[in-house]
Amino acid sequence: MQPYVPLTLPLPQLDWARLIPGIGPANAALARYDGLLQSVVNPGVMLSPLTNREAVLSSKIEGTQATVDEVLEFEAGMEFDGPKVHDIQEVVNYRKTLVMASEALSERAITLGLVRQMHALLMDSVRGANKTPGEFRRDQNWIGSAGCSIEQASFVPPAPLQLPDHLQAWEAYLALDDADVLVQVAVVHAQFELLHPFKDGNGRIGRLLIPLFLYQKQALASPMFYLSEYLEAHRDLYYARLQAISRDDDWAGWIAFFLEAVRLQAQANCDRVRNILGLYEEMKQHVAALTRSQHAIAVLDALFDRPVFQSADFVTRTGIPRPTALAMLRTLREAEILHPVREASGRRAAVLAFRELLELAEGRPLI
Image (cartoon, rainbow, N blue to C red; front, top):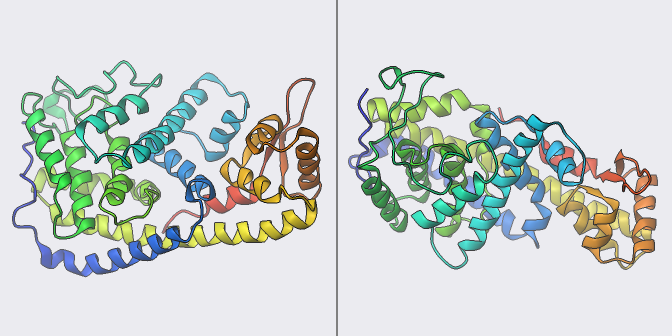
């Protein structure tokens, strides 16, 4: 099989008639979600469960097996066996990469340099760490069943000698304003996957680029629109639509799929964010009434930011005097707002969980 030769960007002769029915509804759904996002006072704290869920689901597409609960329990000091620790660390790296890149966008645009920084952080000390993290590949790679030869591959990315030129063209396209921002981000994601510029981690970097690009283009007030839930639920179709680009130049089929993904995911995200905001308002009254403390809001913010935690870490993060903080935690446990994951034993602190928030963030998979 010959290496894939990408089309130039912007795409020539795109079948807009096929795409127009999906463009309006997808943009309207995203705009509704963005409006809701702008009403959130501190989205980084309030919606951190959604960020954790995205990190888990995007990693799951690549075969990682870890749940949101396991990731948070691990960070709270719970112990897991070796293979599970590797999976959890990949999820943690994904979240760190999203946070790093989001902060970087406050000062600069997405560039190849930033993409390489993202990859280096994503692959730090996990499987694939021996595959030149942060460096674009200098060898020919291919995709197919385990152990297959290049002749048996289902897809062969561009040759390494041509890769730098294709990447520079892709970077230049990021700076343009194409006819529609959602069509453009669909092209940005797919072209990156087809270039397959790293030896490992291309799928996760490509999915991270979706909210970052929408944020850069001011289609989102915060880079917190996550598509991996839909892509994981439709994994086979996701890969089939990407493969149809390389096989048949069917860009319109891919973009139509992507627009539908955005529309449905935006609707699901709106429902989830409303539910989280509703829980916050409900708990604000409840926690204040239970604790009768001036620290009630600080406690609630800490629970939303990290819904699984060690009691000692809770004291540190909130800055509340230790006796007061521990008394408040006891009150919340007695009210069954918090549930023990691990009881305190000797010098080992208890691990507690705000289960209602975790269950709300998980929700149900998209249809």
